[in-house]
Image (cartoon, rainbow, N blue to C red; front, top):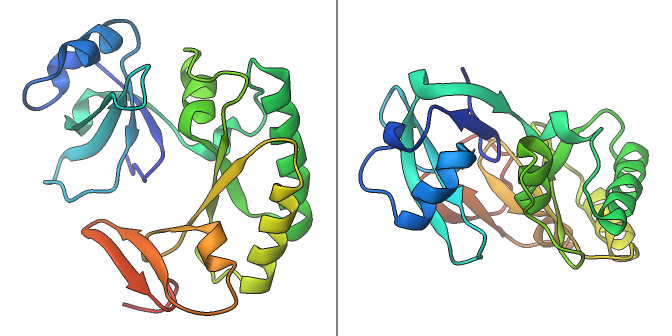
Length: 201
């Protein structure tokens, strides 16, 4: 099993996680044993995950053994599903058209609260929620294309926050859309400023 950042994992439950678990997380995992893959160093046989609670401040970082994982859902598998709120569904549909026009064939999908809700069926959004998106981009994304995507997303009737997954790590689309300059890249070993996150290490 190859788990990548932003994938959603279902696992056998709270007891599978390493170390102590906050009470709120234990309560959540008793009925919804899901977590999102995070970017962090980890020993062989384990996957770093984040457990999310109903409040933004409720996030718990942990490791889950690979053999405790029962299913994996990448963001790309969620593009055909629709959030429970009509406006978020409208924004997701519009964003899909934008991405199909600018990045034909690119792998992408919803992450954040919308992605969690679509994968698990557990409510995680409200009518004013942002739409968080991930674009998997193993090949260099042109900065002009990035700027066009940002402009198109800005015109939608709600906030779209898009991350680009590069060979070096995660980059905010809005940063890469700037004409030049290094971008903050979230790597396994922490944030780095890189001129080109697609350049060979």
